[in-house]
Image 1 (cartoon, rainbow, N blue to C red):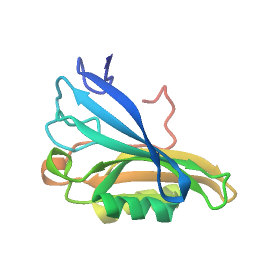
Image 2: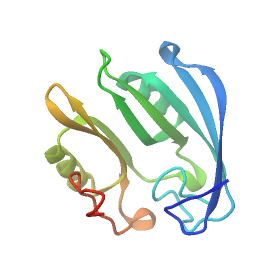
Image 3: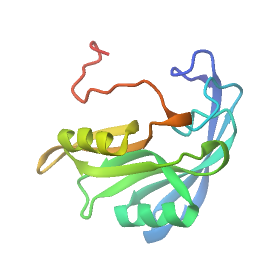
Length: 170
């Protein structure tokens, strides 16, 4: 058990269980998250924000096409994305949860290979709020991969981001 730094005094536990091979032979694990308490009763941030235990699936070495296929097949949404830009085609490590029950959000989006200007534009166009952001170097320069949720109604939160903020600034 550990204390979640994002939620004062909230204890949580995560356990990984091997799940086998998925599309393209990628390794999958299943994460079971159990929380003793939570300050956030709905899926307004990520898979750790809800006080209801659920399974999350993690896929490693998966292409963007396979990510979308798995999201559709599992009626799920992404909560985290990491990029391996050195592979051709580019591959990802993602975490997803079923978009049901306490984890249901009205809309969510994920993007890869985007500039900071595109990130800003996507947030505005979707009235979105970031729940995960990864910066990486590509041949075209600094790129971003991110997951966002609709920032209205039950999932609305005050928030900010700065892709160039230092730890001192934060």
